[in-house]
Image 1 (tube, rainbow, N blue to C red):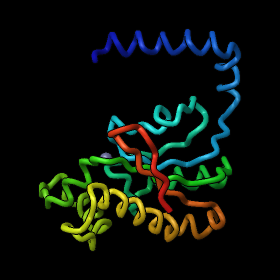
Image 2 (image 1 turned 90 degrees about the vertical axis):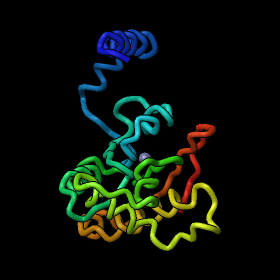
Image 3 (image 1 turned 120 degrees about the vertical axis):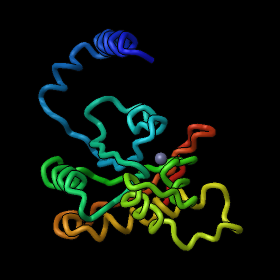
Image 4 (image 1 turned 60 degrees about the horizontal axis):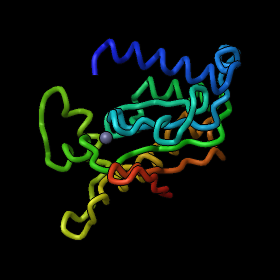
Length: 182
Ligand SMILES: [Zn+2]
């Protein structure tokens, strides 16, 4: 992919939307009313909008490596606050995916001064999984379950989020399906 393809892709998007929904951009500038806050892995293969056929305006998304909930993360906290208080989202979704490089790096104990802090969060999140008895995706599932708990423990969620469901979702790269995890 190159810059030219990005420009052409944008033009194709504009034309497609104008054909399908002539008033799409008019509506878009009026404001957003997303139903879900999504915390997704940054991985280029697990884009929440694409894999759920969601158009702009439908999902309020925060992304980081291995979809981590870290209490000190101001960006996550701010987005979550805005989504819950102002946008009044109906649900929170933790979206992980199979073959997650962040999870794999944590499992393998990859160490690097630029990575250690973040991978430490991931490593803590998957601790306790039996390497011998677990199936291929057990670590990714465990990581998602941990973040569900972490979100619920965030002060911002405790303050204004109670009653908003937090769901886990594992996107399977092998077949495109989303496995729901509670
Ligand atoms: Zn990932």
